[in-house]
Length: 176
Image (tube, rainbow, N blue to C red; front, side, top):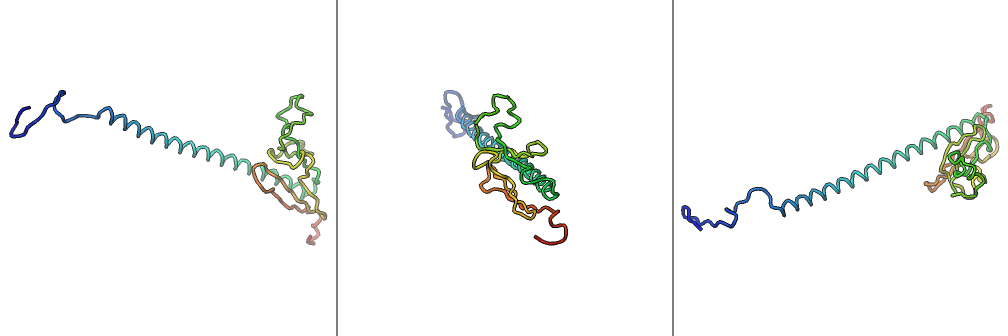
């Protein structure tokens, strides 16, 4: 201990008590807080990216459904299609599984693909059926050139329905 202008100073083992920099404990606490902030920011970013991906998938799905309904409606309105022109087929037997060992297999998960019978091409994948694919009609004829389109989506509770009128039946100006 020594006196300097009337003030008693104590010196510790390592010298004066005023410290420069951070102690190890303070540094560890700061690193822990920084890590927690980074973890929270990473989780938020992950959730935003997942949400963005989901929205893109929904947007793409909506575009495909709109395209298929437009094709079906245009062909029915012009009279170039009938109720049998579009059929549901098992998605498991879709063209992606062209291996012969899958053909004739009874493995079905209830998901169907809407096919254009005349164009021999798939239009929409991921539809569902109450029974087997192919047993259920997608287009119901209501008579007098009126058709009802209905599609059951796997991830949507209510079926999509649309009414279409064959223009050839009503081209004389009368109303249905």
